[in-house]
Structures are given as structure tokens and as C-alpha cells.
Amino acid sequence: MMLVKHAQELGKISTGNSKMPGTTFAIDAFACKVGSKLAKIEGTPCRSCYARKLQKLRPSVDQGWKANLTKWETSDPEQWAQAMAFQIVRYNVDGYHRWFDSGDLQSVEMLGAIVQVCRMTPNIKHWLPTQERAIVAAYGALPDNLIIRISASKLDGPMPKGASNASQVFTKGNDPKGMECKAQSRGNSCGPCRACWDHSVPLISYPKH
Image (cartoon, rainbow, N blue to C red; front, top):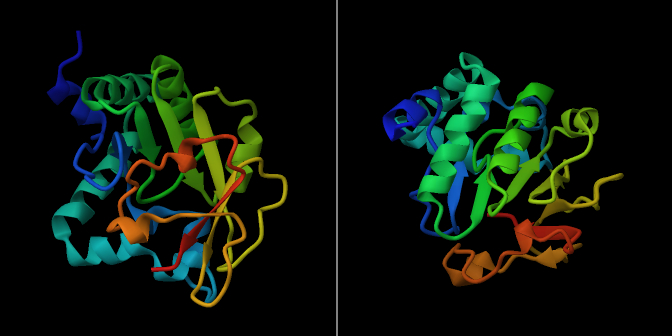
């Protein structure tokens, strides 16, 4: 029988996001692989990454997200998956989980561990946005309760090639290329919308903020 304190020694699932349903998991945004390259390029969504800004402004957030990454790097993947699944089941009352509200996939091995979590939590719908196309392509088939949305690498970018589900960021004065996220009109809250977790919605467009 796993205890919460033991599960959190391998990484901490967040339950404090009042603007999004369910639970979330975040790691150091400065450790993004593709994202760190895009952050140096004008015209990309990563150039003005909100998570990096938040890490600079709030030391406690920075420490927590870096700790989650370190715990992943120093843990056995199977034990890590068990600890994440345990926390999601214990704290999730809405049936939805988001991976990486900060940071991104680190490796195929990490995606494999996340897939294990999804299989251990069949009643939870998981959403994972990513710039790591190569990692996703290298992994292969995914469980039905996990949706991976490939993020367009440029602002106002088109649907990423080869992606079944994706997202893009559009700028003021330009039209969204997919279903427009209305969270800004609800105080940056998802409200009743669950489109990000919906396989039937191919492309979601977020306004740049």
C-alpha cells in the first residue's frame, strides 16, 4: 500500500490549478529540448513561454518543477509510473489530467512511463501537448485515454504534418486555424470546455497571451 508521502518522493502531481479540471504535472521549462531551441527564435510560441516567466518570478514554483524533473531522472520508470498513477487516482475528482503545463517530454522512456500511467488509470482522460515530434513518432501506438497534441512550432502556424491531433497559437489580427480556445473570455478558465482532451477535435487554436 503506497502512502502519499512516498509517492511524492518520486514526483508531485499538482491539484491546485483552479482554472483547469482535474490534475496536472509539470517539470522545468528550461529543460525542454525542442522548446529551448524554439525559445531563441522570434515568431515561435516558445519565445514568450509563460512557464519560464513564472519560474523566474516565483522561486517556489521553479524549485518544485525542477524537483519533479530531478525525481524523474533519478527514479525507476515503473516505480515513477506507479507513484504518478496513485496520486492521480487519489486526487482527481473530474476525470481529466494534463501532462506538462510546464516543460515537455524528455525521452521515449518518459513517454513509455506516461503510457503506463494512462493504462493504470483507465477512467482518467489524459492530455499531453508537446513539441517533441520525434519522441512521439518513435514510441508508436497510444492508449485510447491519452491524447497527444503536437504543437505548431510557429505562431499562426498550420496543422503540424502527420499529426492526428494538434494545437497552434494565433496572434491578434489573425484568424485561428482550428477550434478557438475561449478560456480568455472566462478569466483564463476552461470552464465547461474539454476540447483539449477530445480526439474528435483535430486542431485547437490558443490566442497568444
